[in-house]
Length: 90
Image (cartoon, rainbow, N blue to C red):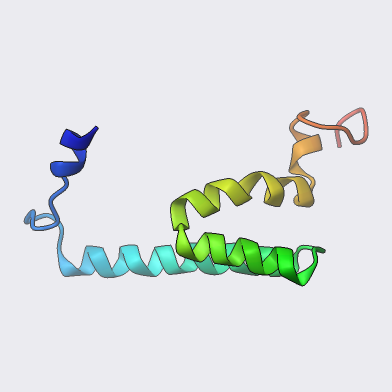
């Protein structure tokens, strides 16, 4: 695993400044959507603050940890048959 991490090289000729800029823009958009989703949840302010802190301080781990809560609030879990909800599909 450490060997693979050591092989990451941002000086490769195919990684240009434009690619890095667009990657950062996409990452900011993903974080913005996650924060917006957290703020729209019907949760107490302390819980929202906790999740926003986790998503900002540990971006990848925070987004993956918040994903199940986001999906359950949006109704995707019953739709995919992973939880309760109405029987008989849509």
